[in-house]
Amino acid sequence: MNIQPGRDVQLLIALLVPLFGAVGVMVKGKNENLREGISCVSSLILFAIVLSLIPDILHHRTLKFPMFTLLPGVSITLRADAMSMIFAIVASSLWTIAVFYSMGYMRGLKEHAQTRFNACFALSIFGAIGVAFSDNLFTMYLFYEIVSVCTYPLVAHHQDDEGYHGARKYIIYLTTTAKAFLLPAMILIYVLTGTLDFAPNISTGIFPAGANGPLVIMLYIFCLIGFAKNGVMPFHHWLPGAMVAPTPVSALLHAVAVVKVGVFCTTRVMLYVFGVDTMNALNLGIPTAYFVGFTVLMASILALSKDNLKARLAYSTVSQLSYIIMGVALLTPAGIQGGLIHIVNHGFSKITLFFCAGAIYVAAHKKNISEMEGLGKTMPFTFGAFAIASLSMIGAPPVAGFVTKWNLLVGSIQAHQIGILLILIASTLLNVGYFAPVTFKAFFGKRPEGEPYTGIKEAPLSMLIPILIACAVSVVIGIFPNIMMQFVKAVTG
Image (cartoon, rainbow, N blue to C red; front, side, top):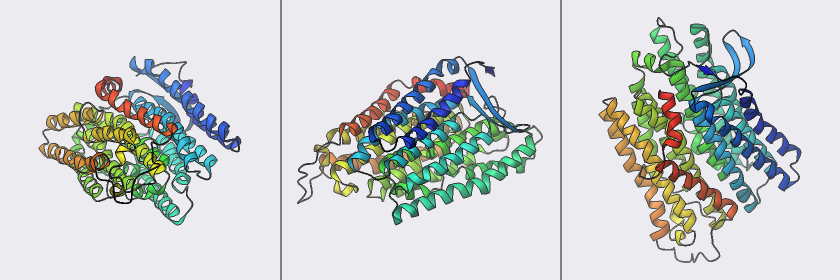
């Protein structure tokens, strides 16, 4: 591992920027413009710092910043490598876009508790960046829990019965699984290996050659269940329930801070704790791929049954997250690359879809797909962006999702798994089934009687511009996939 001294302090600065941003928001909360200005500046600074790390990572250097040592082999240490950058770039860039969108949304609906909202939003990114730059399982667990706690007030934002119910389910699922499965697994891994540090590459993992096979398998299962933010069935129920939150929160949960934290942690542990060699030796990969394949199909079927747009998008997220785990579990170069690049592709495309749902609600006060017939003629930019992001989720060229599907299909062939290939094809058809009707009804559907849509127009520019930017990025990284694939390829060597 080529360590780059001197520049490692940037990791600490990157971590502290959203934390100080949250403090600034709380201190200046009464001044609406100053409060939102602090959020915007913080997000831009964080994005700039993350971008400044790219040259080191592309030169195969690893940045490390030790903070505290608790026990031999147990420390709070930050680390930036190729896989870190995949998530850090997504989290920092989407926070920047989401901050500007949130201003238009929250002001447009005159939402209450906007200071708390902005502060918790920043704290969630603080946790997400901590996860991205974790050097070991203990540091990752610490920031994983921070994300859970800081997003609870966002889910419960409306402070009504529905909001509290969704938030209670959210926090119980995530904290219970982490403490019941992940914490014991972490302790046993330390006892077995003497360290919680991630391996320097994805091949070897950290387990000694003579490790007890059944015990390692049990620890692997505990980790898969413990990171319940990954949305794998049957530990997914918190995710649709969290849709009671405002749309910017839904976008944050699905594209940036929560579910991406779950799948990033899951895949990080699969590759850098267990490693490809250990997973192959214990036959952990292919069974995992089929296990999450069930989630891919069932969540898509459930999405077909939902008329509420956010609910349909929520079940789409449950399905799409399992693509990431499935690709890594194939343990082939193309499979791993397809899984990891979907962290990026899904992030930009799904935040576009949720932003569109929020814009439709602000402009037309419509939540159900059945109420949106003909609305595309009134809001062409919003529904046009929705159509493009939908194509990405389906996996159609030239949008980003095509790069995911292509690599996953190649990976399944490399692994000689025709069953996974069929799951991918079936899920693509299901994707068409639940995304295409939204766009078709909006542009070609007949307006319901008594619904002239008079006075309805596009959402404010503060919302529309972030939608178009996120949508454009999905197209750009579909046409020029190497922008992000260079980090993915660096992970697989």
